[in-house]
Image (cartoon, rainbow, N blue to C red; front, side):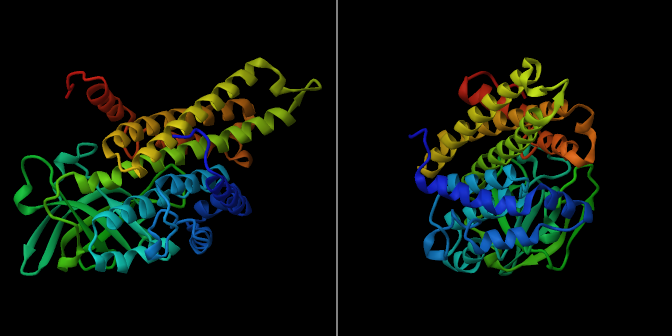
Length: 385
């Protein structure tokens, strides 16, 4: 494994960064406050091939790996345009379909993932299950050649702008015992499928929803892969999710740090830039170090995943997500503190960043559950729950 990215990856980062800067953080915040979507940026990124860098070439994608897609996600976030649906649509959903979908499903969906013309949300979390996916009760039952899906999901991102949702359920005969997830593509206009927006304090164009599935009838081809493939199919999407979440966080951390360092260079008190004082310089240097360490772990996780080493990638992806979320939250807090009172003014855009980076410590998996994973699987300690 090289600690230096390839020239191709670096060129991709530069091109995506340039695109993101043309839109910028002001554009992102304006769209969020207006209740709109970052549709123009998403469509342009899709046309340029950035959203499909990990889709196989035979389906119109770039043929790269999750590391390439993570680089796109990170650079857009660093430019002030964190596209949350990148974590979901091309990373989770496209990856699962590419690995486990039928030829017909790949032909139908992958070219549209590649050019960004389709957006697919991902529904796993349930009100009474939380982080315990084994307690999922959304159930699919057979009715002739169809599936009938019933259940409820909560905190599902971007449903109002999605064409479909990849729902994690379980088959009727698997309501008890170990989780054997079944994955269904549910069009957002399907009869019996409704959703309700959750009011959030966070300023984001990617809103959160509660989903209701009331006997949603789906054709047989709505099922992705096997109905009893156990956890393999699910984690084919969740490991990329953690890698992308890590890049999302490191991008936000870099954005906050950039704002802080620029302010520390230009804000003068008694004729001296405030960044000359160690009381501000050292905390910012510490933030930079931790962001860079998180980026390295993210690149390791992506490299392992792209090599096909799913077990090692799972451990590294969890560690990367943890480290990145902690680094980003600290970066946003220190950026606000560096600005002093100005940090609370809307002009500088730091209040929203503090809350946005805090989300990374909770979702898509909490820091505590990652610590449980590392304690049990990496250190071999007894299970605590």
